[in-house]
Image (cartoon, rainbow, N blue to C red; front, side):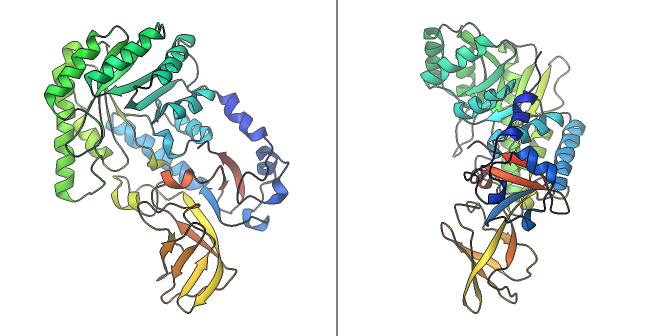
Length: 411
């Protein structure tokens, strides 16, 4: 069997010369390769960096990898981290090294990115009804016996569309699917047990699909960790478990898949979807992604490991204006930092807070703090998924602020 990711393809990223396409990086790095830069180990802020700039903290990221891997081992679950968090083959390679069993993707375009780097095992956490995408997938599966992919189905119509497209494509290998259990008011997924069972029977009857398990997404209604919300999540996960038990006679694999788990309730997933009957072989697969960098907002409040994970993603910005006594305007905006969950959090200041973002400006109300034009301010972020997509190249720094890696993303 092939390796989980093509190490040579990932290593080759360090040999591609840098240029103007990578915002924030020093112009003195243009024409040099990431390998050249990292060999010199420059201090980023002594090397003419142009703000704003996003950075990763190497020590925190390594600790987070180890913490999540240990937690997963202790709870008897596997981890297929969601690759949309970072879309970085380099970071994914580190997740595989830490024991990840697969990568999760949300779209076929993301699957293609990971396949370009030889990723062997992919979870596509959506129903796939696009005929062109199914033709591509069929060809990819038939060309590589080691490539494995599962996706979801939540409708008989979806089963029919998949079966028709794969038949027209002349697919040899069946596509592995999990029937998706949804929740009222949530996102995708069958809304009741009868719907789950009807879809499962349709899959089992399809010559082009193989029913391997049950999937869910327990955070479809939000990230509230109040007791009532957690109780609703646990009730939903009980429905997922019940579906696995109920459908056991018709699964078409020796080892059933039970998969769920965003980055807020993965402890509840491990509680609900482990300790199966002795006569059933079930692999419980979590799909959390944001544990890798954690954050200073959403997941700092809600992650089950919020006391064990460290924020590893920061954005630095420079004060460009002090137009009012209590206001500083900085060179950082919605094009640079996340704002969908919370606004950025300034480090090293006690009362200052970001109150608004424009496309390229941040409004910092200072309170009792003071900054001057030209000062650099470090910010923590909330929800890393919507920071990574703004930065095609991110320096990774050691604890002394030296560049130890340059991380490429492919959004």
